[in-house]
Length: 164
Image (cartoon, rainbow, N blue to C red; front, side):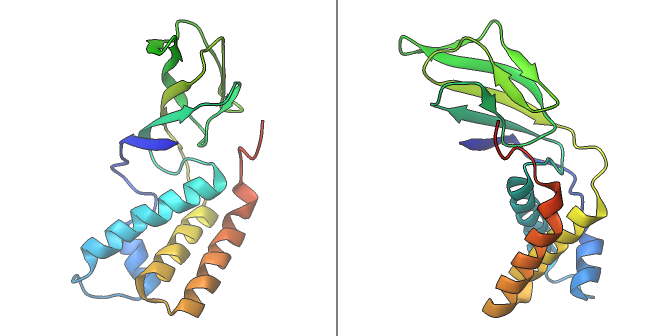
């Protein structure tokens, strides 16, 4: 399960860019559109496995390792596991930053805290965010499905972390 510890403070698509895409020229929906930008960015991140904004996350798994983090690129800040029913910080772990994989000798469950610093966000992924914002903002049910599919097709080439 992925939990946001510290949310992104800067989105890759600005309110002005989203409003231009939506052809909105008033300020009445600025709060709504801003929240839709965040929701759309999160959806594109989960779809692609690629970080699009700087944030801090906590991710947990009950499976045996190695553990593939759901978002890349990442910097691991803490790894802990459950040993004999108690959570303990892992003293040693390996992190393959290129593949976003955490491995080590852990107990039955592991919890990883990590940060993301995505750097440059490709225009195609910004377009996917805008299409998802449009789908959530004012699209009919048929248009919503079409726009969401279009967003996924635009983002498809950027998918990562689809297996170890």
